[in-house]
Length: 217
Image (cartoon, rainbow, N blue to C red; front, top):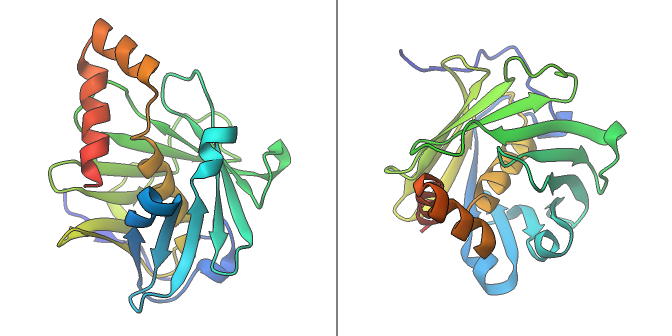
């Protein structure tokens, strides 16, 4: 099946219209800062900070907040504990109120080499089909974001000489794409008890965790 870019006239506004541009947007993902000072940073091609995340919040409250360059909260990403599919809920601003829910993300399966994330917008109550899908290629250390389960691409992330470069297609909300990348990044963090349980029972789950960790190296 051939892959095609997203149709141009349609605007994919998930978080805010201001993040939808009629051109391709490139974001460089800086994870060195995550290890050094607890921040996940996305910059433009000139090195200007576009988004940042304080990772320390994840340990304290099972959440991470995506900020703009000025430090204002854009969305709050809340990880639901004790779920089978690594489920996240994303809310507008610095909130976890149900009225501010924008979308949720879950891993398609916990036992697989090739991970897929399903994205459901807030109004998609039944979740019978996903609104977006993230397909991760561990060997190439890359991923593609599709509209639903179609072959229509809305964003990609590639490994460019050790740097993770995200390309957001025209008219697609690049804050939404950045939030998905933050969730993908966090899925490599699994507590020791979970790892022990998974490895003892099946071993397959542990493989996924190892791949998630090596994906960012």
